[in-house]
Length: 148
Image 1 (cartoon, rainbow, N blue to C red):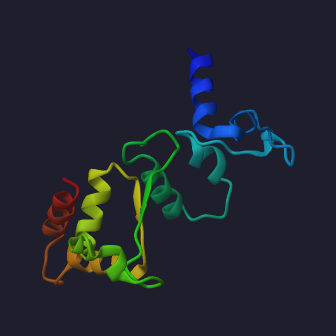
Image 2 (cartoon, one colour):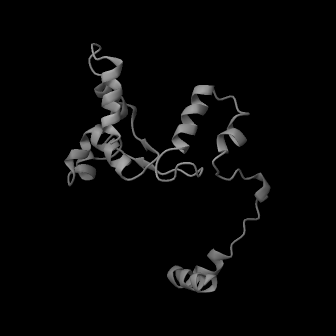
């Protein structure tokens, strides 16, 4: 079975298939790599100068989404026209100009996180926190609604 899979992959990769599948890096030892895993933050990051809140947030990212608990992440990157034309990116799907819909898309796709500009994510945060008269309970309900 493994031999069949390797042959299929070689065929898909074309003339370079064998060399790509048998490649071994020689520039550094594999012992120098920090491989993903559910204990990545404890094993690799705790000894850094990162603040506890940063480590906690990173662990939260690693524990969410369809890859939660594996040490791998799936991040939805969104550029709403800061560097490129937003019209070209979102014309076919204008609902994704709304940060709330971007987050819903990431949740539906099982992503661990969303990467975007501070303006886009800040706008969503202001929608969640919106007017200061909103109680903490109402804010929590709003966040729960987004994740459903």
